Length: 275
Image 1 (cartoon, one colour):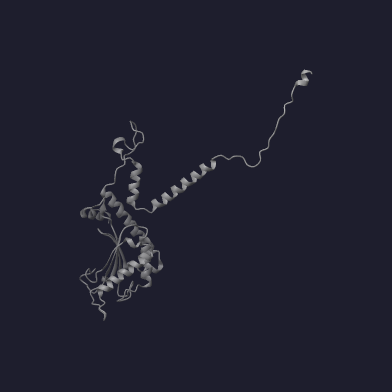
Image 2: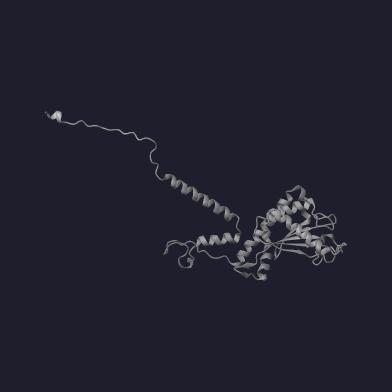
C-alpha cells in the first residue's frame, strides 16, 4: 500500500446550535441600576417633604458621617494637603432663623394666593398675617357685615370656608403645630339654653379647625383650641367694635432645640430683626 493510500482525509464537522445562546448576567446589572435609581428617587421625595431642621441635620451627617471632622477635616483620606471645610453644627440662632424664614415664606405664599383668587381678593383687608414671638399669626377679622361667620353663629360663610381651605392647603405643606383661638366683642350674647360668647368663640375656632383638617392639616398638628370670648379684645378702647370678633390661627414657632427651650429674649431679638 502506497503512502498516498495511507493518508487519512480531514473531516470537518459543523454543528448547528438550536435556540438562543446564553446571555450572561448583564440583566442583573441593569436591574441593580434600576433599583438604585428608584431608591434614590424615593429618598429625594422623602427629603423634599422634611422640615429645614431635618434637612440641615442630614446634610451635616453626610459632610461628617463619622463625627471626626475635628481630627482629620472632612477629607476621606487623612494627612496633609487641602482639606474641605469641616462640618459644623448649626448654632441655635441659625436654626431659629431657618424656622422663621420658613414661616415668612409661608406668609408670602398665602398673601399671594389670596390676591390671585377673585372671590377672596376683597377679603385682603380682613386678613392680617404677622410674625410674633409665638409664631406666624393669621387673623380673620370680622366687621358689621359678617364676612366669615353668620352673626351670633358658628356657621361659616362660603367665602370664609374658601379662605380657610386655602390657608389649610398651604399649612399642610408645613410641619409646625397649630393653635386656634376664637374671640368675640364685649356685647353680651346669651340664649335660653345658656349659650354665651364663651361657647360661640370656642365653636367658631372648632369650625375653623375642622376645615383646616379637611384641607390637609393633620389632626395631630393641632396643639390647642381656645374660646376666649371677650377676654382679649383687639381694640380694648372700643369693646363693642365688630373687629374684635375674629378667629386667630397661629403656626407655632418650635422653641426647643435638643430638648432645651431657646431663651425668650433670643426669640424676640430674631423676630424683631426679621420684621
